[in-house]
Image 1 (cartoon, rainbow, N blue to C red):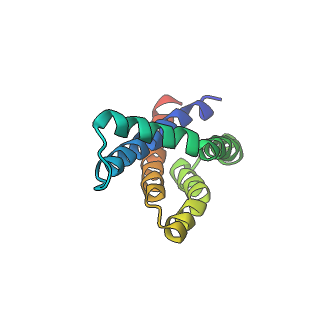
Image 2: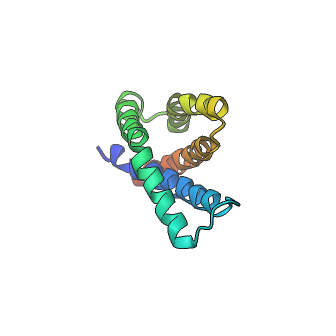
Image 3: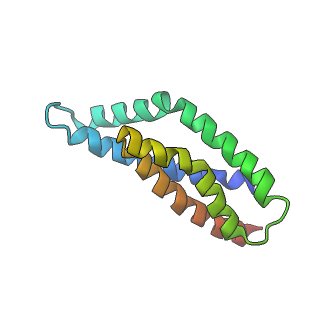
Length: 126
């Protein structure tokens, strides 16, 4: 159960990086006159409302893969976390190139970094 509770690292990291990317993307649009408050509001709404299915899929996938890969045997934790990252992020790699939405790429890289941080956290705490 403690391993599943470390998923907050992934959620916070992905949300933070995608949020910052969305704010910067909103502020750099030439034809729109946004102030910083509007950019933050638009980015927050886009991530939470538009990405509702993404967050549900991500949480379910993380919990299921943790139960299948990590909880039965914690040996080779880093490899298992990278396998988990590959399984979860593979559809987003496809969507990045198909739809030319680079916000997915930001989420994928952030997810890899947070998986590695999560591995260090699991080794330290458990």
